[in-house]
Length: 440
Image 1 (tube, helix red, strand yellow):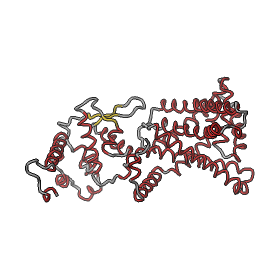
Image 2 (cartoon, rainbow, N blue to C red):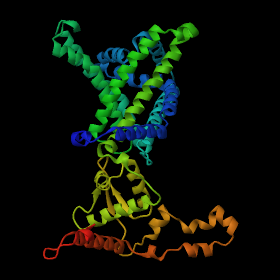
Image 3 (tube, one colour):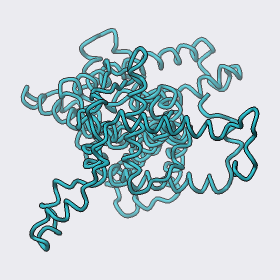
Image 4 (cartoon, rainbow, N blue to C red):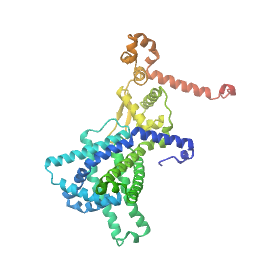
């Protein structure tokens, strides 16, 4: 199930307000309006090269030629408001035809422009998922090349099947049986949802659960359809652009629609990235000075215990579930622990990442972790305070804490003994019950 229904019953107005604030904060952190504007500009520069590269597949393989008309009809009846789709389709077909007459150098430039745009899209989605490590360039190009080439083929095949379903029922949608008519009407939304889900699963360089991607894709597809109808109605009934720009009105209208489309796409990506957090309730977590240090100790303790039994690793999602840490925060914390050579990451292809403890808990102390996450005394001479004090050795000596020289094993053993002692104290003895005042 996508959500725990019992947990949903416990939600109240305060939790909904907190969730709304969290969603707005995430949208502000991701700068979705600004990113959508940037992607709009790059899309205008690359829409013709991308369509040229994609439709070149249908020219190269005669078996796919019948798909082109279906895809063009789908794109400009479902992706663009109807009152501006015809002139845009005419212009883009003219531009694509002109692009076919380019030289080899010009075609290389088109391909490079397409790839650069796709890399911009990847950077935007990686930022939403808080991904820092990028794929190798060759792998990134292959992923986008597969999306550009095989995506239209799959859409064309699906549309051909839909057309066949309509044709065997006399070709009139309004005469179709109710069930078949609903299926034919829902197909465009499902195709858009699948396209969004593929974008959310394959483009970010991180593991994205298929159910989260599809649910976010479905929400984005419905929002896209609603936005298309509202935008089309606005352009048709409030001809502001036509009155101001005249025959040139198609361009600003198209730019505005591209911006709205990217905004919906990025909102869907934000939903996909936050669904695990919302489902587990991690968005309610409160932080305080030093909380990152304690969270890191929790991660190390979990991995320390995992060393005693096979497979001696813990999945990243399991770490987040056990410690109730959101995915982006946990990924950043694990990256810091990895930089200290305390933990190591095990991952094959796009499978879920697993983590293992690499350091020796018998000899590794708390000091490196404390200096990384709380107070870095070795850098004290480089601070602005050092310019006033001159000599910072005395201050460093006063701030030096010998307790940080304790090993991880001693810390974990002390904590476990404390938990055991607390449990024994809390449990009443069978022959001499603990008084109520003592238990309080």
